Amino acid sequence: MHVRVKATGKTMHVARDSSTELMLAAGLIEEIKPEPPKPGTAVWSLTNPAAEGSEYSHLTIRAACDVCAQKIWGSPRPNMADVNKLVFWHCGKGERPPAHVAAEYVKAGGGLPFPKGQGANHQPEPKYSESVLDMNNHGRTTKIEGVGR
Ligand SMILES: [Zn+2]
Image 1 (tube, rainbow, N blue to C red):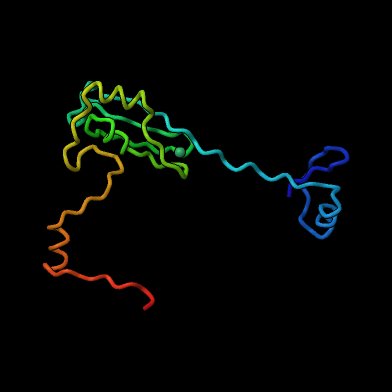
Image 2 (spheres, rainbow, N blue to C red):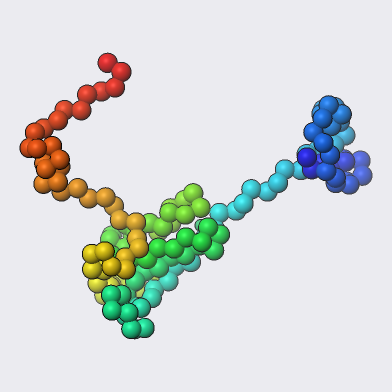
């Protein structure tokens, strides 16, 4: 463990043994705990890969984090309510587009949705249509019983 000798300010690595425990208890030394990694802050931007010749890309809101190296991009409908549903989950937190990026995207008329299965990399809310639920359940209604009765 990494410790600081209170009398001199000197730091050193020592074994965590009974002598160390005694010196800690007596207040002669204190443990120096390693700093936890700091969560990153997303960098938000607007890009238009269509301008670079990509067939399937449109005006897009992008977010990237240097700390965890995650990225998302998405083209929600151009209104503030839909743009604010875009959440970038990274470093143990969820961030939404900053107001100036959201406003610029809405002002520019937004992007077009990506064709299904092509180019999109976003974290959409799961959607279940009633017909899918019906197919899985063969038209019956299932009552979900509570646990532990
Ligand atoms: Zn991150």
